[in-house]
Length: 394
Ligand SMILES: Cc1cc2nc3c(=O)[nH]c(=O)nc-3n(C[C@H](O)[C@H](O)[C@H](O)COP(=O)(O)OP(=O)(O)OC[C@H]3O[C@@H](n4cnc5c(N)ncnc54)[C@H](O)[C@@H]3O)c2cc1C
Image (cartoon, rainbow, N blue to C red; front, side, top):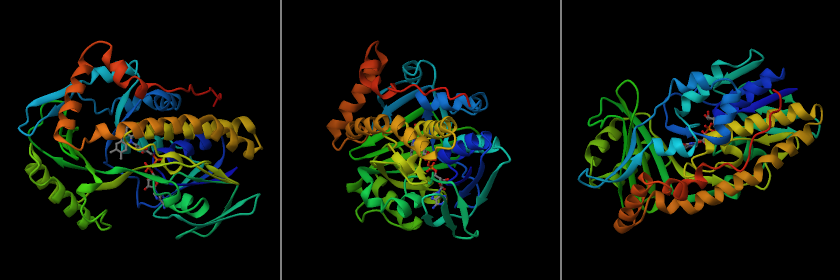
């Protein structure tokens, strides 16, 4: 089969990996000029961990982990008010959890791609015509291409989704918060290997120590702290974040100074993508493009890996019947992902409480995670996948 995959993040590289291995002719298109570097750290467990393991890439990635010893919640003066050892989460995942930089996952998969996969950076799909048998794909730069399948793996704001399924507004469910992340070298204090987080009403700031004396900062803001909505331009975004964090306590002054100097700021709304179907004719969506669960669900990278594996597996299982393969892919995963999305919606309030009392209660609740039984009661559902991925023999 000839397959065009738009977007070389985790979902796109993983699908290219499987389809290349199965002998298909794959073009992977990425609008960034090169594979993304840096970025935030994600936890992988459950079906995502299984999918990565099945690709044979887990040992290499486990060597690149960014594990922490504890999650510590502090107050305005830096005093510990909550938190628990990270081992509690690892135990909930039955030891099968990896903490990895998002870009390390896609770079490791990318490095292992079969040479049947042609990658084109700095390009993107601009138009799609599906004649029922073949899909005609137009690009910003390259000449048009005919393919058996077009896959949109181009993330939360997917171009393929917009072109084939409809505008973002039909599928995007904002969760009332924005997220930002950025990095700096040599930041102090480092507090050993602890993830340290401070919450003022409506605003959450955390720092996570990384390799090579780097520090990753992570900010969550309720939308009401973005007075003028979401600025489009990078300078406007930075200014809006600085305004929201200015003087909120703890290390906010130092973190605002770091933020003022960064030239690599990730900033986006926290949204879910909810669609009734991920396939239309010879076009399918995977990863955040299809069903972003949002960082609150904490399983988007895992789902992206699982979706790539299942889509490739069903294509393998159904041979020439691509329509049946796409339908089976959707049938196997859609309901499971939708339930996780619902669950995340309920968790959203505890991520960034609106009031000082809410912050206190949330911080004290995290202390319960140090006791027996409570981790399972409070977070067991989060770490439970209803689904076991089939072995497609690929
Ligand atoms: C702060 C934060 C923390 C998170 N924590 C976790 C966690 O702990 N566990 C977890 O499992 N998940 C987590 N997630 C979610 C996870 O990162 C995403 O769900 C996952 O990366 C989705 O992968 P993807 O490949 O579908 O999309 P993306 O990683 O967004 O990749 C999309 C790719 O498509 C490219 N692209 C975009 N538009 C175009 C276009 N028009 N043409 C061509 N290419 C295009 C992009 O440049 C990018 O390379 C977190 C997310 C955030 C924001």
